[in-house]
Length: 224
Image (cartoon, rainbow, N blue to C red; front, side, top):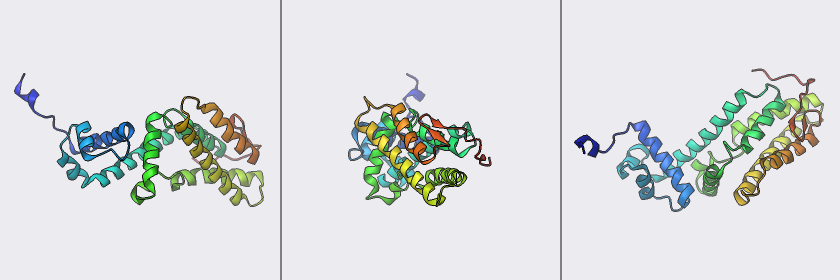
């Protein structure tokens, strides 16, 4: 064996941070949040304990970074899918619903990570800001869409209708993630989507049906 083959591989600071974050998430998936120790993380990452303190100061900071990374992956995936969505508000809502229920976002790995962080959110406000379904980006995105739909539909108190639609949709999506966690073998993405669109079609029959968004030609498109 050549001498250079016996030397530990050197990573850039960015790569080392990424390895530690991925190792943290892998540990959470495999052994749970409470058993995710520094020793477990560095063993998986094949890095020294000193790297955790060098790049994150401590374990808590690393866990927060892992929670932030998970949120960034979620919203990065959603943003990419929104790029190919139609520009109408109902198409935006449909994309959010179908993306959230799709396999890219809702899968065995992501569900374990998300619920692990949700379980810690009550005691850790830093983690909570990355595991809240009512965060500003997602809430504001669909609230704006529902606001345009409610106003175009001529609904009385359209802002309240939009707010109720927003909270109802988020609650339904969160419930579907819980159902997937508990019953992944029998979970149906199509049924989950249909239930949510049934709710939306009752509120906005001109813009949604059980299959998703309708064309809503009488509703102006949002600006790009």
